[in-house]
Length: 159
Picture 1: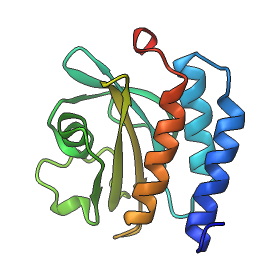
Picture 2: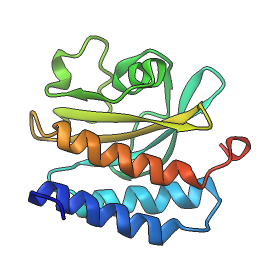
Picture 3: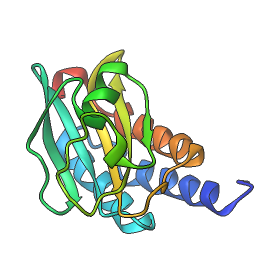
Picture 4: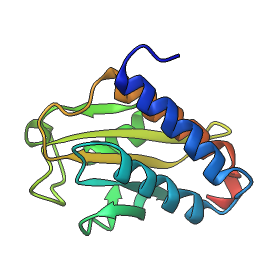
């Protein structure tokens, strides 16, 4: 049993997502429902979605929120940094992040989780918030679990 409300929320989301996308191999269908679940369930978000690796850049995938940047170069901004480093990046104030790409001026904090399938980076899960310092280590753990559930049904060839 999770020890606090945020852990309980992520445990519930993981269970819901697992049931929702179990047996669905299509990358876009999985991503669309994952983005919708997160955007509709987590407080203080103004964007939740995916960028998928296509060649040497990240290309916008399914999301919830305002229109977003279509393409992000590897290593650029928070998404490109998380993709290159293959690690979750939490930014309390995106305006202080070197090379931040401002798709939505209302976004003030961000968390980006790489999506790895069979040791291949296929993209990133990106969440933005209008609140400064919105994301913490509990979000990191919870979203990495969500990313693992998402990735578990994806074949590298499908990505």
